Length: 122
Ligand SMILES: [Zn+2]
Image 1: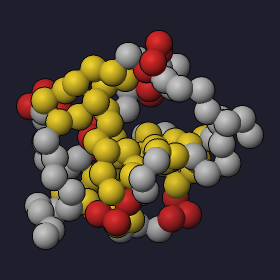
Image 2 (image 1 turned 135 degrees about the horizontal axis):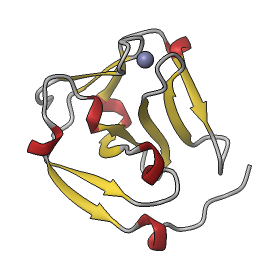
Image 3 (image 1 turned 90 degrees about the horizontal axis):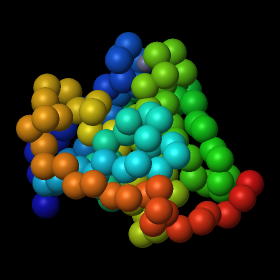
């Protein structure tokens, strides 16, 4: 059953997504990439996500495997989502949800700096 549809957008509006997965809590991580980009993870099933703008506007930074990476707007640089998780899940950047204050979300800290399993290399 589909839930509330939430819209996500980058800063300049070039990239837009929608997602109908439940939003209960988000994850803040201190690993080498999340610590720099500030992505606030909202992990959702890939099937709950729709790209409502053109895919061509997305750029990808891949640093471990060819099929995983961080996807960001090529114009404004906003990190929109991360792929490469098991179970066909993707992580959306909750900071991009339109019309919410991220301070209102329950945030769980994950010590990715020390607990992140090593991934494959390119
Ligand atoms: Zn943008």
